[in-house]
Image 1 (cartoon, rainbow, N blue to C red):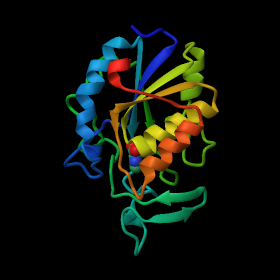
Image 2: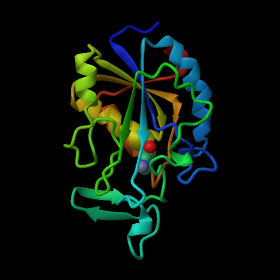
Image 3: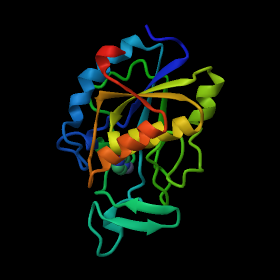
Length: 206
Ligand code: VGL
Ligand code: ZN
């Protein structure tokens, strides 16, 4: 059993990020059984849920002449444009039906403000507007975050980097994650996480 100072943070294991979904991550559903097997080893478990308004600024559909996976400059910096995904209360935004959410103590919804995206579980994409997760963890005496879920190179990586920036110990359980890998983003983000002091492990070692 992992100590009470650690939490398993399961990132965005939602239908739209799994095969057949609007923003399917290759093999996204492969993380479900790995994560279900990890859950009993942790004292604390939390989930994140991408939760966008129907007209969300990160959707390519609202940017004339732009296609999904192109990049635009928004007020808070560079933003990848995505296919419409994880619209609030839609089936695509629901957790994968086989993910065992029973022991989740907290669900952090993110990306629910129309004009700003949120990859990280800690901050929106302006890197300053907090979700409240840091305060929640601090108040509960949790100083270590073990990350699993989707996608390695976006929401998992941004959560890992912000976690380090806030002083948490962070471990990414690599075989419990899958990546989008847009133009080498997986290698770039893995390198950035490594340099930030993020640890990497596999489910067997947890
Ligand atoms: C994600 C792109 C857009 C993720 C969420 O969960 O990694 N990626 N929204
Ligand atoms: Zn999203």
